[in-house]
Length: 245
Image (tube, rainbow, N blue to C red; front, top):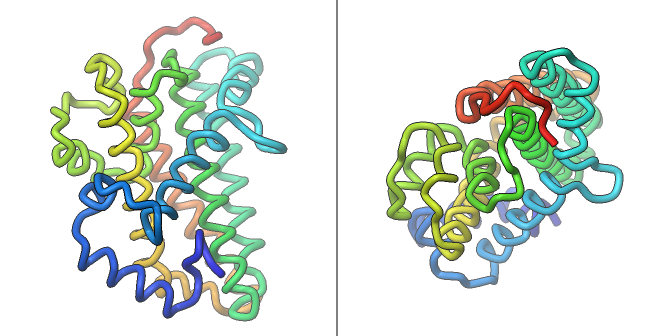
C-alpha cells in the first residue's frame, strides 16, 4: 500500500490514467464520489486541515508555532524566518531518513515522506499567516493556505471554481465565499497534490541508492519547502506588527 492506497508503480500509473480520463482536479472534486481518488483526496484534505493547521499528537498547531516564534524573536519578519528555518530542517531530515534505505524501503518510505512533507508545509504556511496577523480559523484563510501549496496552479483552480482572483490568496477572506465552494476548492487542491505526487514518482528515483538517496531526498525536500515558503511570504503580507494572539 502507498499514499492513501497509491504506492506501487502500477497503482501510480493507474492513478495518472484515472486523472487524465476523468478530467481536471476541480471536476473530480465536484463529483463528490468518495471512492478511489476522490476518497484519497478527501482524506488528504482533512489531514492537512486538521493535523497540518490545528495540530494532532506530537505535531504542534500553527497557532502554537506562531506564538512561540513571536515570543523568541523581536519582529514578525524574524519570527517568519525562524518558522521557515525550522520547517526546512524538518523537511530535509524527513527527506533524508525516508530515502536512506534506497529501493528496499522506497515502497513504504516514499508515501510516508509525501504525507509528512505536506503536513509540514501546511503548518509552515499556516504559521506564517498567523504570525503576520491572519485568522487561520477562518475557512477562507484555511483554503488560501492549502492553495499556497500548489503554487501557480492556485489561480487556475480558483478560476475554474468561479472565484474571481483578486491578487494575493489572502484576499479570499474578503470574498466571504460559501462553504460548499471552499470545500470543492480544498478538495481540488488535494487532487492536484496527489496527481503531482504520482507524476513525480519516477523523478524521485534518484533516491533509489542507499545512503546517497538520503542526500537526494533531503535536497529535493529542502528545495520544495523553500519554494512554498517563498510563496507563503508573498501571499500573506503582514497585516499588523503586533503580536498575534
